[in-house]
Image (cartoon, rainbow, N blue to C red):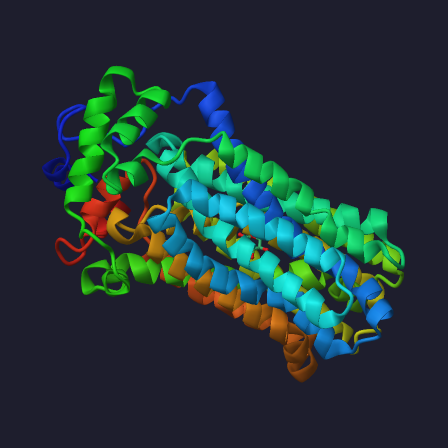
Length: 488
Ligand code: BGC
């Protein structure tokens, strides 16, 4: 830790105690400013979550109205993640070139258009197009919102700011499950999908009243705007020192970041960590459970659709929301690594138990009672463990480890890889279950937890309490530089 500080001090001018690099934003934001940043981040996350969660309830109605088969339904389900994958790549470019706020405005526009196209779709191709457009918006927001949160957060609360984004995702998923229940019926699917245009409008309004990231202003040569924003964020007399700190870290950066810079050898270490977390978050099975929990519960012996929906809404949806508060409470106190390690252990053990329950029951219909109870309890443990660890920590770390020079694009790459992995897992889950059975499928997810656990222990450094500039200063200067963070 001391090492990282010394290195940081070499790049950052005054403002804080000797040896410290001041963070770019003040330690305490004025209430109204913090609230407006939170509103943007929460609405962007909620829309992301809503689009993830809503489809499970809409599928039945879509199938009835258009009389389509399983493949068309899989496309309607999973192409939102495909749109999000491309949206996140574009989001990085938009966020770097036009600013974090404009990227979020574009995302809000895409949400609104996508939701309306879906709601009024006369046929399946138009519906799929609407899903792609909304997904594209989800991808842009998935890059711009946490990036915005990380750049505007005081160092000591950065984990909390970015975890609030994850909290909003979980609230969005939960609300979608509730809306699905409330609107169940023949034409209900149109309203289920169209409803997200409303929060899209709210997001646009929230962004219009929010401040741009001072770091982005400084990077775009708009020094006065950067200083004015720092003052508005409560920097007062320290505004010049903060700006000098930002400019010092920007000076070390190339003028125009290129894709080559993102993959440059000096940034390999953070790139690997971001991509590793992005993949790990998905291959351990979260979205197989979010999307298909109704059918998992059905296979585990919850016979009526009402019982399945109830289990999904409360055991998955509500537990996911509540458990995310654990991360918000502890991510900046305990750090990212302890949460990841504890969470992966909980996820691995619970997935192993679900696997055993399905193996014991043999055919999906045998021994339903015991399988149902074990599956329910184990999935609750899984969701809790994910919600305080891989869920929020992945987005937090992805948004803090990359150097400012390439942050927008590198975050975009990691986010796109996350969506690509989500697309593969959600697209192939049912086929894998068909090929090897429920039991082995859950053990496969558990095996990824075990591999991930070892990798996190040896390869993921602690970033708690370090300013973005300090983290940046710790990479690539000497072999093993990241371990300076790890020891903190
Ligand atoms: C993941 C999503 C997932 C959600 C569940 C997010 O962090 O990126 O893929 O659906 O958590 O809460």
